[in-house]
Length: 103
Image (tube, rainbow, N blue to C red; front, top):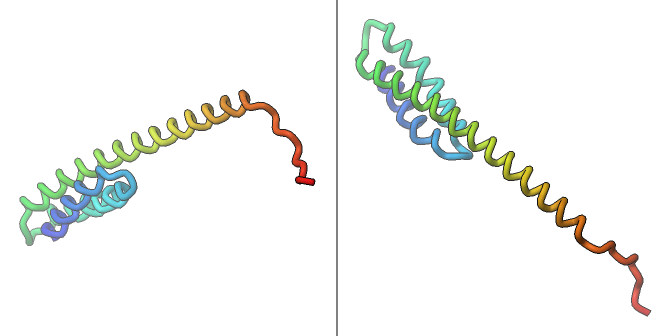
């Protein structure tokens, strides 16, 4: 179980930095933290890998949550700025003439 915790921690740490798949990394890190706690409490297995996996998973969980939150805020601010810019540009345009077919 400690090896699975370590593998999930590494995968979660790698994925948490990417904008669109970062939440998958956070999910892996969350599962890894649970597995790390279970492997530390079990008598059999390598407790050292469980502890290292738990620490790496906690870093991936925290880092991924921060990165994804910052990414969402940045995209939201960018969309707001785009909407403001297009709204201001449309005020400067002359009114459109009504449609008149060719004769």
